[in-house]
Length: 588
Image 1 (cartoon, helix red, strand yellow):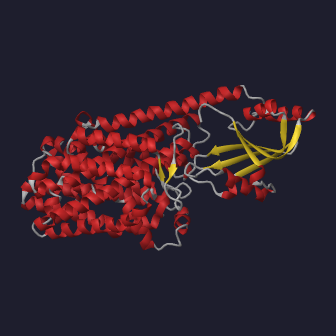
Image 2 (spheres, helix red, strand yellow):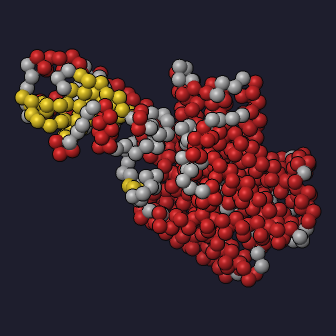
Image 3 (cartoon, helix red, strand yellow):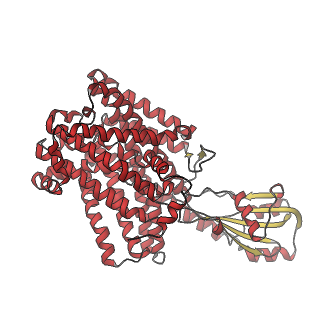
């Protein structure tokens, strides 16, 4: 299966070396999945799940984790999903755009796909709450391993770290962002080294590479193994970031970082934890931090805390990005968006979302109290999103890429079986905390749908009362008002209607500028629109023009820049002689 866009995506980054981009990808793309070893094994053998901590089960669990990583991350995201780019961009919004565009003539099916995509995007907010909470809390819990005296301070220290992180958002992370890659590289090296150092105590753990041990684990443990799947899936949470951040780094750096660093480090660390448990079952209290010698515990806790902060930052930035995209696609109301970098347009800060997210994260930490309890809430939103993405992928394979029905069903059916199995296992967690991210996601989903539908209904109602533009201009120019020098730009959402601002200007000032432009901004269901396709200009009577300016959901609207592009079409605008008129519409 090939995609001709593989080359074009990476060519955009040709000015930067593959190594530099891969290093940057470590800090942004792999922070979340890289912190999973902190809590996965402890959660798998949580006494609540009833799984016996035997040698066979330890090897079987490690085998199941390994093959889950290989099938879900390596095969699904790295091999398949990275080929499904939408103008170089990835993520569920890009996948939704590809799928919906492929069935544009089937309105009912397209509407269903939008509902699926919107639900997957809404669930990302639940993940955005749980990830910072469980990651930072599990790192700080390492202090308990060093000495029980620190136990009363775990929650306060966690809250201080998280509050500081959210306070930092308004100032931007550009200054420290350059450290994310190197620090995360040190983290992955540490994962690999500690794993190798402990494998020697029980080399039989290498049997976990044999998939038969994973199968045997499931067959022999039955229901308990099924419950354990809800913990095993935590090993691949964050894997969707590979696809979502494709547009930032390109395909090659993400794959290079995965195969060259992340995958070996994760596998070695899980093998090391498994070997430690074979040699010392009591280490299940915290198998990750007990990999370290006593003298290295405090540095390990510090490094783990920094790594989890980096992972949390990537998720928070992702929430800001998804929010902006949802606003531009009409799924959320307008909010204040601040740019925190003069160089990078993608670095944004949304105050309302930031403080709302902080409040939810604090509630999660205080309410659940430990990473073990939070682990019960984690995974439900992630596995639901995985199912949504796989369903959308079928329509991309079948209708956008024109693969035969059998091939499309076979490819997506394989992953759908895996995804739905994990989803079913995590559903069991709903009464034990899984409801928390689901409530957040479902609430936002209905908010998004309500806003989107209400916005459409209100627009249709407002446009029904609009005067038609061309007949109005014809009648106006039969007995024209006084024409004054300069250009008037009337911003309107209805290309065919007369802007209310024009009617008010004529009524109160009784003048018409010598050149009149009716400008409509359109948001397309693609990530970016090239400058060559940004504008369409239609001349009207009386030195009037109708201009449509198109943006993708990841573009930053810049109307003065759009007017500059009009020079290519023979229209020049002098900024000091150009006036803008905007009608007040309640929904904007």
